[in-house]
Length: 224
Image (tube, rainbow, N blue to C red; front, side, top):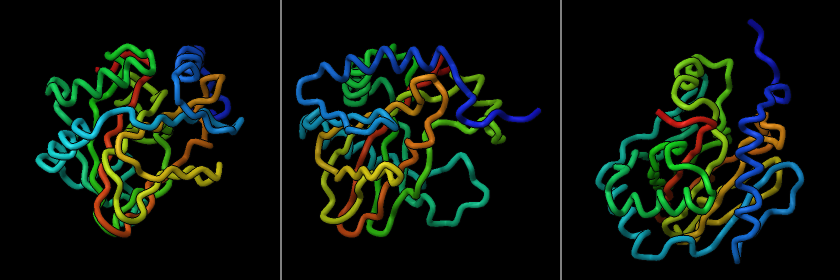
């Protein structure tokens, strides 16, 4: 069976997720929406406070392991060389940020994946990639059973490394420097619910210090 190109993978369900979240984010005081008609990307400073950042950093240091990738074949060893951990959802420190993200986006918590913590040392990076799933990949049948496609991504920077570590959207010319407590959120879909290739992004190389972030992804259906 042939796989339709990204622009033909439209979905009313995923389009509805975008339509519901968009006005909520636009109404948040201090929210910045990047001025591009090619993707929906939002930024909010001071989303969580220093104490929350510090507690999440502590949890990441206690639990992180070498980061996996879905598309394991055909990538060099430096494609993603950070450390990662899925944080315990019911830990009060995790639940606080988990609930805050779901509330901000107005998405039901059961649609959200477990919050993931990530740590980048000097020289580590995550090269350009998409958060949405490619349905022609071997992982897709299993992913489809457990909530399907990813709609929204929410990322929170927990600290400010002394050098590097920006999150960039190369095709859009957008670069966001790490700043403690800053949230970055984007819609992985176009307005018609098809995957948006323009949301390809990367975590650039940390050149000094360490970088810590947490990331949460939402699916088109409840994540099981």
